Length: 218
Image (cartoon, rainbow, N blue to C red; front, side, top):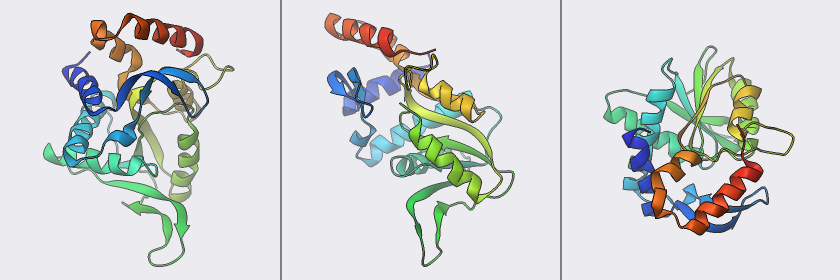
């Protein structure tokens, strides 16, 4: 594990984004841990988040990209934060994001920011992928705009669980295979558990192990 990953796990705990207890995911699963990126609420937090994404991108996508894309709505502040983190490092990174509904006046269209063109390598920045639904909605929007190449998908936390019982792979791996693109995360749930160690209660560790045994993927 890299230092930026350890720092990111501590950061999520400090700001209340990563919590342990009893929760229900959008899919209806009862989960012992929850990652709520809607808890990020300040400029300094977004700056820290953007730098962690930039670290993960530099490590996981050495072949590069031409544009960052943030799916509405949570992906919008993410691509802004990540592009600013790269600017701090002397790298000018462009981004775009989508509207939920096409605008029929002014400049019109669905996408805002960098206009996509044929041949662009687009890197999608998401918060957490549980079922891959938003990515399956996003890819047609990108491909309708131009003949782009999917450079990959990066998320903050890989929950490492299956989207459904018919798959043996994680939801993130499923999406990567479906769209033939590399995927990466700042951290995985296994890395979270490893780093926190004794800070987790025995009860939390037992619930997590049970959940991972039931829903975990490869």
